[in-house]
Image (tube, rainbow, N blue to C red; front, side):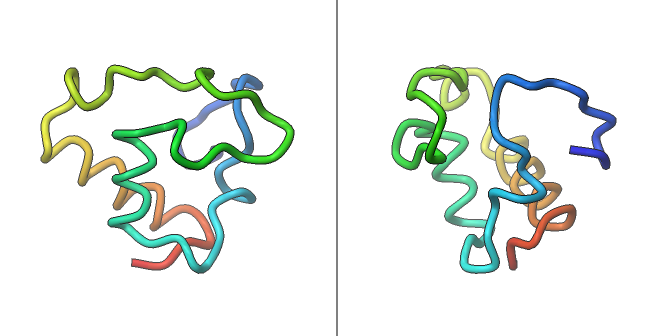
Length: 75
């Protein structure tokens, strides 16, 4: 994700894989339960499974809002 200065190649390009029908609440769910929706071509368990325990609710919301603001997803 260019806005984050990311250059990783482990997961999908979030600028392309987050769709206009993805919203902040849905993205929060994806962060907390990353295997609930896996982008085609990627395997499950690639994303950390501990975000629900390591991130506060405020951090999850801020991350989701950042992703919406920097992708084709909508609030």
